[in-house]
Structure formats: structure tokens, C-alpha cells
Length: 146
Ligand SMILES: [Cu+2]
Image (cartoon, rainbow, N blue to C red; front, side):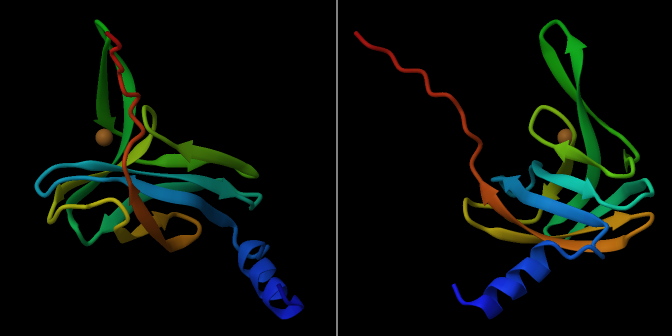
């Protein structure tokens, strides 16, 4: 890799003026009319807390910020939370089985490898556009040997 390219890459990935960084965004594959999840890690490099309060996705009729909770009787439930606060100099991870962005009422199928552009809204940092690629969830396969 030449020095110029390396410098450009380092500038992109370690720009200290980027107070909020979105790391490894991805979404789960989904079917038209259904809902799917969007996940990423938020790094807040500033010395002020920031709040994620909204997300927009063109291919979803509705987008909500969700958390997963234990609903008792071995059931897991999901509910909307109005926002996620990321304290100063810390990070917060949205992941399956935990906090996530729920992309609802999908306007088309989202297949493995599809890329979606999503806009995240932060109180301090404003709008941040991200690209998330669709992946299939890793599901443990049951194997029967006879
Ligand atoms: Cu959800």
C-alpha cells in the first residue's frame, strides 16, 4: 500500500473531529412487509454525552429504537425505547438479543448482501449516514446422526 493511500485511510478512520463513530453496521435479512433488525456499535469520542433519538430508512415504513427484555416464562419481548444515551468517552453496542434499530414494514425483501443507507439522528452530532449490509443470522444447525 502506498503512503498516500495509507494516509487517506488513516484520515478517514481516525478523524478526531468525528465525535460519534458508527462501527460495523449490519442488518439482518428480511421479507417485504415484515420487520428486521439493524445493529452497530456507537463510539462517543467527545467529552459530552450524546443521544441517538431517531433513525430513518427509505425501505422501511416505520423505524423504532428497541430493546429486548426478559418477558418471563422463557419468553423474550421487544419494546420501543425513545432514545439511547451514550455517555462521554464511551461506547454502546446494539446487537441481537439486546438493543437494536427495528426496521419495520419493509417495502421490499432485503436479501443477503443488499446494502441499505440509514440516517441516524443524534442530539449533539446531528445526522449521520451509514451503510449497512444485510447478513443472515448465524443459527446453530441441529445435526442428527443415526
Ligand atoms: Cu425490535
